[in-house]
Length: 338
Image 1 (cartoon, rainbow, N blue to C red):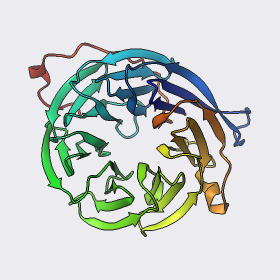
Image 2: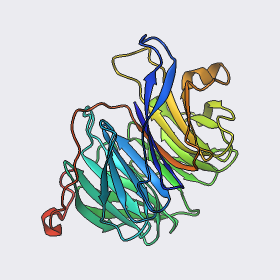
Image 3: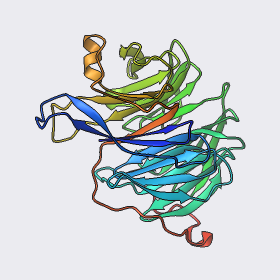
């Protein structure tokens, strides 16, 4: 399992989560640093990871690609005219290598890249203002974006164009699909809206104490959130109630949460959740222990930097990554590979 974190100081951090002993039943873990690169010339705003691939986006108008299997930086993608605000890999079910990388930018555009090698397939405008967050449906056929223009947009990734846009009462900052793709979650300040994916119908709102800054879906309808209250909250989105929480998980605001899915072959593996805070700490928790009381982190790393985002991958792959030259636009006028 790997974690990557971006920082305000322009550094990207990579960690490997490993057991302290060779006993597979042991829950003693450690975060071993894989790399630390001053990849960007401006603060890192977003990171993404899937299989051996990782990416970081920045307000320097670039995306950098990393190979987690070799702890190598592969260089930048120069296809942007404004800050990169959100990144997401699309990895088809039962595959360990992502098929596409999607990016959202401050100029309201979405870009779709192939990953074998990394080449631009399509860019199109989805919003009039900066996109705050992007979520790809588990099918890979559509994506949701929320923007500073106060709108929720749905884009058809098969055709590479926006297909729907709805103006909202408040500016949403975070949008996520659940694991099944049947629901999506939209955050605005301290409220989390639970919606039906088919028609965007609001089921109910979840009211957090303070502003929510990050969210990550888990199994069985659980949604993990973190933010200004410095706690990790696990919401049962089927009932609309709090399932459990890790109070004061960090001493400062939480800027990133990752659910590290357990190994299919290990039924007794801990249900791991990682979190990152603005004071530089990354912590890994066994979420099941929160039901019994406040747990201690299973592993911890201090980057001594102002962290802005966190991503992780629990998939293993032997494929090597490379960056290629983008084909002429007319050859990739649609996102047919999605």
